[in-house]
Length: 102
Image (cartoon, rainbow, N blue to C red; front, side, top):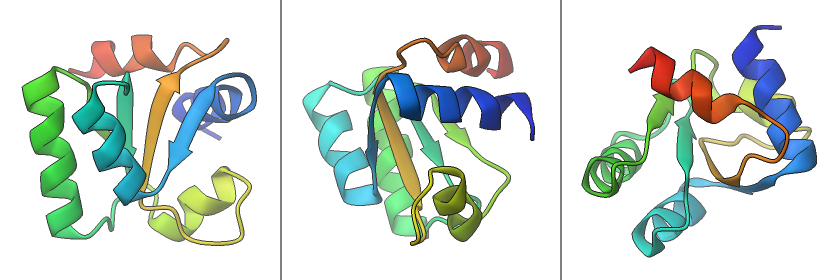
């Protein structure tokens, strides 16, 4: 498990996280998001909308190497997850990792 996966699991258990591309767009439009994570096979129109709102709001958007099924399993869900928005990272240091990669 990579360090991004570990920090994401920690954010899921200790912070406030929203799953799904519709929720990601909604939270980014409202300015509540601190970071967005996209799966490698996120639909192009959803990914473009999330990346656009991320640029406008200066919110880091990370494209994960895993596809939506693996990202869903990582989140502990039995369904695919194409986008994740982190509102509060909790004890996780995932926001620091996003700034290092940029």
